[in-house]
Length: 368
Image 1 (cartoon, one colour):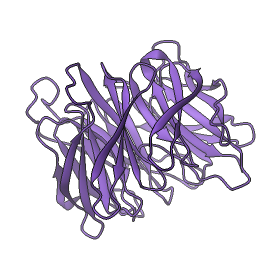
Image 2 (spheres, one colour):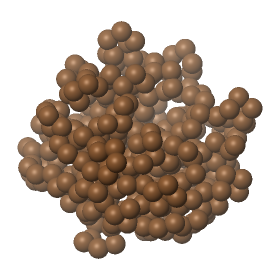
Image 3 (cartoon, one colour):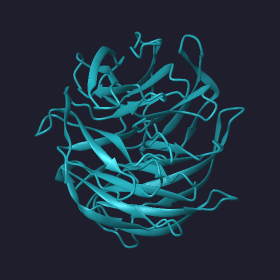
Image 4 (cartoon, one colour):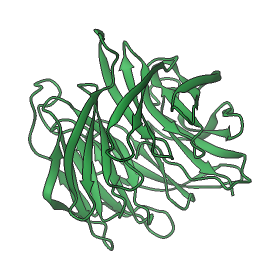
C-alpha cells in the first residue's frame, strides 16, 4: 500500500515516475519524471497536468490509468480524478472525476483486478469504494461508510479520521486505518458491485492514542505492519487471510533512544525481498527508520536511523528493482534518493536532492 510499483522487465533501464503534491504553494498539479534503474537518478520533474491538491496517486495494475485525490477539506469539490497515461511520452489525459464520498480525501488503493478503488476521507472520517470501468473511468461510489466513535486524544481524536486504505492479498477484503479511532477496520468487498460490508470481526486495534495512519502487508499477505502517526510507533499484526482478523504481536518505536523533540510518523514500506521495513518521521527528526524482518516470526529489529536530508518526509517508496528508496520531503520541496544495501537494508544517500514542489506521493510506471 505504501507505494505503487510495476516490476520492470530485465531489459528495462528507465521508468516513468509521477509525483503528486499540494498546490497551495509552488505546485500546480501532477509532475512527471524519469527514473534510471542502473544509477538511481531521477530527472527534473515537469508538469504533466494541472489539478488541485493531488496529494496521493495510485496506478491501475495494468499501468494504463492513474488516479488522484483532490484533497480539499470543505463540503464540496472533494473528488477523485481518473487519467489515462501514454507510456511513451508519459502524457496524462483526463477521463472523469467522481465524488470521494466525504471531506478531505487523503489516500487511495486499487485492487489487483483493477476493478475497485478505495478512498480514505480524513476530514469526514469515512471510507468509499468506487467501481472502475473497463475504460478506466470511475463510477459513482458503490459504498460510503461513515465511521463512528472517538479515542483518547481530545484534540486529534474527537471523531473518526480515516487515513489509509488497502486490499489484502486475496483482494476480497478492504482495510482502512482510522487515526481518530485507533482502529484498522476490515470490510468485505463485493467482486461485482465493489460495495463494502463490515467483516466479522469488524476491526483490529492499536494502543489508544497511537493514531494509526498507514499500513503495508508482507508479500505472503499473512502479516500487516501499521505506522502510528501520533505515538511514532509501528504495530505488527498477524493477519488471517481466511477470516480477515488482525492479531498484534509487536509494537516498536520509530524514534532514536532518548529522543525529546516533536514528531509525527508518516509512511511505511517493505522492500521487495520482504527482509526490510522502513518508516518515516516528520518533525525534529526528519528521518527514515530501518528495521530487519525476521522471516520466521515477522518481528522487527532496529537497523538504522537515516536523515532524509530535508523537511517533512510525508512519503517514502521503494523503486521496482528494490535497490533504491525515494523520500518525498514535503516542506523542503525535494525528493532524496537512497541506495539500499542488499545485505543489511541500510540506506546511503546518492546524488543531489531533486527539486519538486511540495511532494507527497510517488508512483512508478514501467515503460513497455
